[in-house]
Image (cartoon, rainbow, N blue to C red; front, top):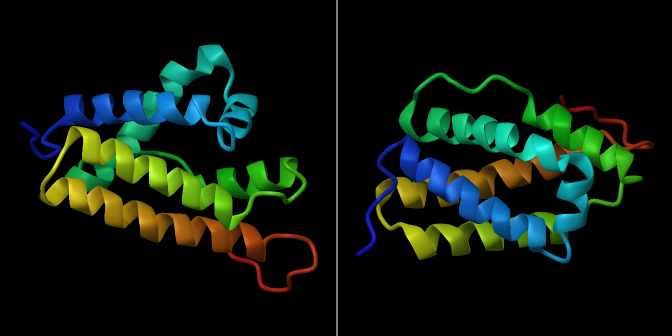
Length: 136
């Protein structure tokens, strides 16, 4: 029987299963695997787990600038990251949460990812060459 996301162990499970799918995905895997070396994945999962622990439980653990990271990845990919990439990420996120959890925090994680994905894509788009408005 599924339960809600209740603690860091649940977040760690979600990170493991979700990013396992991401790394194997035909569209997203090449991008993630290019930017995160094999030996860097454990630390990355901890950092992203800290992000979600901060967002879901209000525990101030995350330190970083996801927007700057997304802008840099888009730049290194010759500005080729599209809404399709974010849509695929979101589909896998919702799918993984649905396989593992249900409840208020699970729903919050889905909604937060949807809003953050929109923000990250717009920040990348506005920071592309030729766009006059800069968001950081």
